[in-house]
Length: 231
Image (cartoon, rainbow, N blue to C red; front, side, top):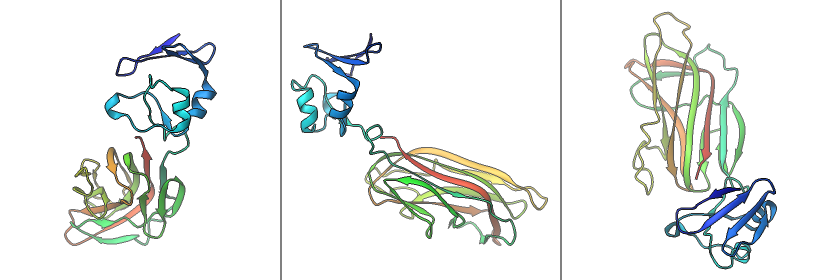
């Protein structure tokens, strides 16, 4: 018997061998499928201060409210994720030129990999949030460009790096810098990841700048840009 104790006085136990859930009190036994079906929109447990209104099906199962409920978006089919990529890009001619100390949107993505509950624009190379929440944002690049140049890549939300939502979030911690070598043709990796709160309608893209005041060339050989809702 595996016992799960939520952050309040209620107890919920899982009988692994028989695959049943036992609630105390009064000790009713439910199958895994019954719990899953009843909690399609919600899951348990959370502290009372985090409680959200349960649906009718869940109230039928937990009629005495021994176990509270919250969203189960990730396991009940309401998850959100998206990925766009750069596949087999050529290195010549340069794909983006004149990159200086002002951030410019990376517009070289050429493959929409997959998405759910996030809108991908292949034309604008951005991702638009449908469901608000906390997201893991990550990106990985194999790139080349002008020699002896620092390239910096960072995400932007609604054309901003900070103060872009009700959380007054700052996204500048999800950032990476790489300096190219002195010989032409140097190819290297750049990547970063982090957690950020995003609101419905937020538009997320990736941008690049350099320390080359005259303007640098920037070529992406391979890349992917991923958002996954974690809460």
